[in-house]
Length: 200
Image (cartoon, rainbow, N blue to C red; front, top):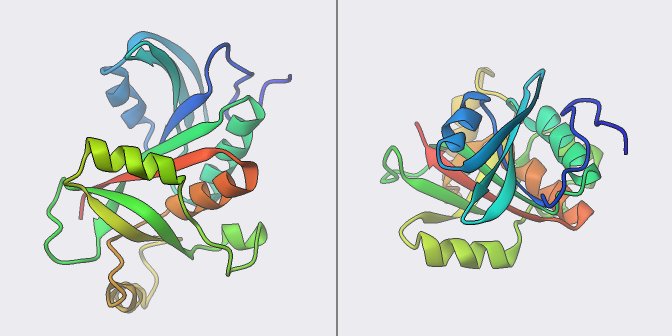
């Protein structure tokens, strides 16, 4: 198979699981926790490495900010044989009491971004893989589990009003990529989960 246009990767031997992050600097942070690492490619926002964790080889790749660049990464990762994608990212808390640094694990996402509506109607749900939620609950039972919201920007005139609106529906936090991961995961039959660190 040809090298993918944006992530600049071809199929990798014995690698079916990937961690995606927004900021390419986070790839280097995750690298510290892996053994037998190899640098792969760095094109545009897509920086990638492989490494081993507990004896299993995984791919780590950055996607940049937002739905479009994340969708490109997911499309091309599935093209090279990746069947499980876990997002490790950041979010802003939308409920009082969620302290900085606490984990928010998305059990579903409001699709308040524009890209996924180009794939499926707005009524299509953005949900993760149930068994990955179960595994997360066993590993980090003190994390916050619930619905999050994915959006397209921060600086619109009525952004504060929009966030307050969704907060009233008990949305835990906001990010820009989770709904894209979940929708494309469902469409492509791959396993997905979004693990978010509250930074605001």
